[in-house]
Image 1 (cartoon, one colour):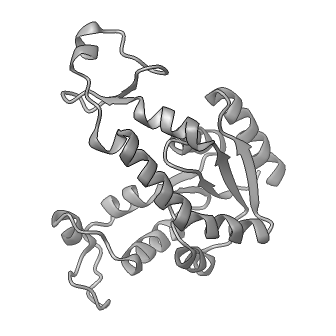
Image 2: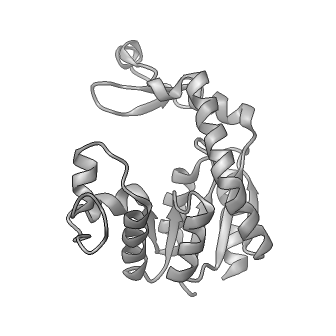
Length: 211
């Protein structure tokens, strides 16, 4: 079986991380996220680019956004080292989607469809354990230990107001990307509101049908 080249899309809280982990294990391919790719290439020499710093790590150390052209180069490098992959978190806009076409040919774009109400419910219910960094959910994944439950905190970016703003920004930036892949005949939608195991069955079947 050929190693697929996949892109997984979905709003924050849609379950991309959960499904990507299952995809990488089932199909023996790399999980490439922009965050991991940036961390793996912090010392990459970008001095030839017309950028403020000479490495991506310097942007990260300063808490600044890494410019698109640097992110593009890092994703390109990560893809070139993978026989098969599931790409998660890139492209975030139409310009990046066009850049990606120059880097590789995708076999399939998976879109996890989840309603805004459900996304808000999932994200606002998340809680952080400040001592361990573990993430729980008040409904779907509460801690068994009452002591842990006592110290859980809601992160600032998980409040309802912030979540709705994040979803609005995602929608605005990503809608053209979804349209782009739909028109190209690469996009397959999966109902992301099912329980994770049912989502996985649909995801797996869709990938297998493609490859």
